[in-house]
Image (cartoon, rainbow, N blue to C red; front, side, top):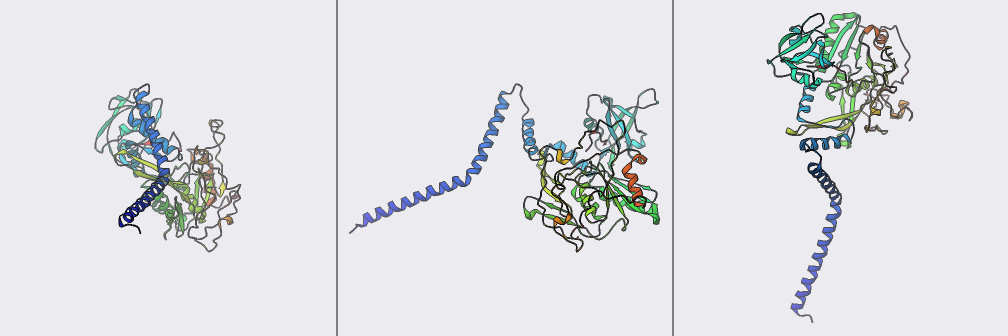
Length: 477
């Protein structure tokens, strides 16, 4: 018979063994579960080692902030061409651009031979009231030479707090000597919409999608309808060379011409992140025929508008294939450290077609011929999203159908697109002549709306939805 002391001893020994085995098992499980994190921490240690080696051994003492920002930019650039880091200054500049208003002078400028050249003064702004004219050359700002500055640096100096003065030294053709012009800065609001009557046609050019675009477009449409009156035959919406902008503004502009149905569907990493924008009743064009002009410079928000109006058969798309940027970037603020622009979703037209690296095909293809002086200078193959290194690939699979606008809902295969037609290929010529009479695409659109040119639909129109960038672009300041 086992003595009581022996029983206690063996019980203690057994429990100790069980506890030890459990501990070993748990440690093994913990290590196994955390091994991916261990690899991540090892990579971070590698980054730290390289960072310290550069700081200590590089031939010149590097700037620590520059090294970190470059590392962050490298990480984001490796994802796709549209994800990036914005320093605090760049973040502020981006906010100014999207707001469409800032303290400044009210002139569009470019750089020519080391001085700032005035493209045009903006009506009813300090520069216009002070007598600044197109083609004026600005050589000094507050008596400091512009020579040596970049265009961005010169523009930054001309912008500033409202009610503060600045003196421009101007050289003007026909004037023997440079002269000074003192201008007091004021709020400058960039009108993203330029409109005019082309006889019985309303012509509306949307240059960008900033916070003012929808309101400016509605105002322009109301004005044109009053000016043209009952003889109004149709509307041209010119989105050529419009690089895009704010998603909510693209949705609002599409909604301006749609009575119902889906406008755009955005699909993120997870299915629960899928969102759909719907049109509300009300058509600012009162049902009049619409032509949308696009070309290789029409990207992002422009393609959302063109795709929505095309899929709903609300507009005829004329021009050439668009750029093909079918992704959504979210601005994520980092407090005092700026922000990151991160690609978070793809977007799809109402017929469930992703245009990422494919673009929007016009219903009627009209090529704009280049003038003789530009022939041979343009690249053989126009650049589009598909030509950008590291671009986000388009998806062959299409997301769940957006809510249809008709009862003719069919699977996506009903669009008649072959695998060959779905291959990546975007972009086209982005040349638009300044003179309307030389603008082949515009002139064709005018004839089309007047019934003088029925034309042949060379690009296959989308099946009815089952229901429902130029380096020489003038800089405003």
